[in-house]
Length: 214
Image 1 (cartoon, rainbow, N blue to C red):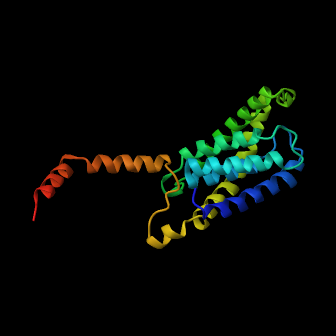
Image 2: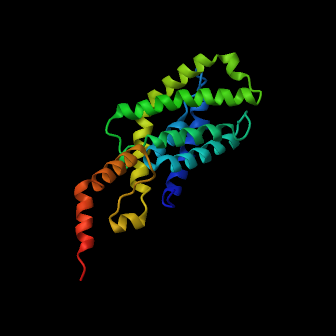
Image 3: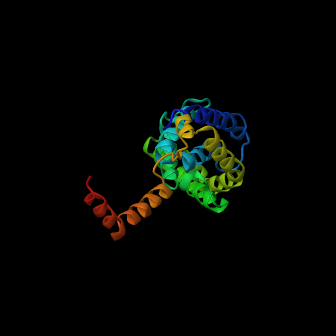
């Protein structure tokens, strides 16, 4: 993860944690609580790739584990957001730019469902039975609903800030591209470039080039 992205990620994570604890955590909505931190992690992962998303997710989850009024084992939410950040980073589009809102919403929907199930599963392993009293099905449905309602406002803004302020100064000065990790878009472009460059015409040019000696 590039050094220029650390302060940007820290500000966004702290802002998301503040909203999570002071606003959305006090709404007393039925079922799950809207997960702003998850949306921040997903948005940054779609820009920074799997490595950056994993690191941001772990840091955000650990802060949430330590922030009052935390009532669960430390490291539980850090594990969940770490895995969600890595998984969302694997779906990073080329140059970290989503071409449609629906694709970002699909990533958010998958992360909301997977994070809720994983959080409940880890809780069951450590003896937390809160999900059984509320109902796991209700938790998943409400988490999906709340996160999808907030995603169009949070995820695009996070991605825009991550792209604009998280660029490496050296990369910008040299005119290079700020890839941000091996997402699927990057891997697909690398595969296409390598296939084109390794064709018969390319090999023929290489042979002709090596044959010219002074």
